[in-house]
Amino acid sequence: MNINKSTDEIIRHIEKFMFSNIKNCWVTDDVISIYIRKSKRMYKDQLLDFFDFASINITLSEDRGKGLFTNILKSFETQYPEKNIFIESILNDRLYKHLKNLGFEIIGDCAYKIK
Image (cartoon, rainbow, N blue to C red; front, side):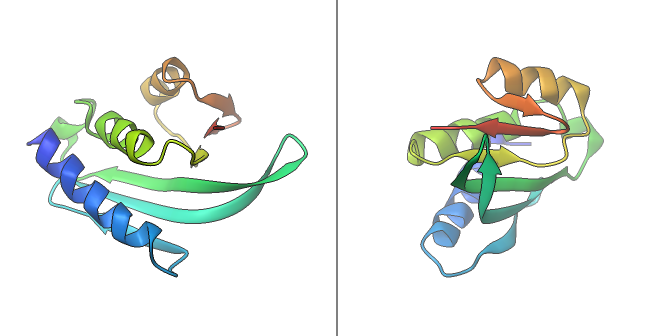
């Protein structure tokens, strides 16, 4: 797996999505598939715009835990520093801890990063 190649490809797909009228879609490459969304959601009594990472699937188990999703998140935040981020239905305990270290607030099984 080439993390930088996959990250660049996914970010290119996200870029196209950000400037489209589409509200949700899958972005994929050979290694990872991510369901993304532009949403509005309540956060602490405020209605805010979010970019959602709603479902993340890394194809091969040996590619999991190698930093690909972290790389994609960091690239996204660099490119869109003003965007609030929502990560839906986290099922991986390691990811919970890692997202906390990256400054996300965990509420239930979801993570929020407010800009």
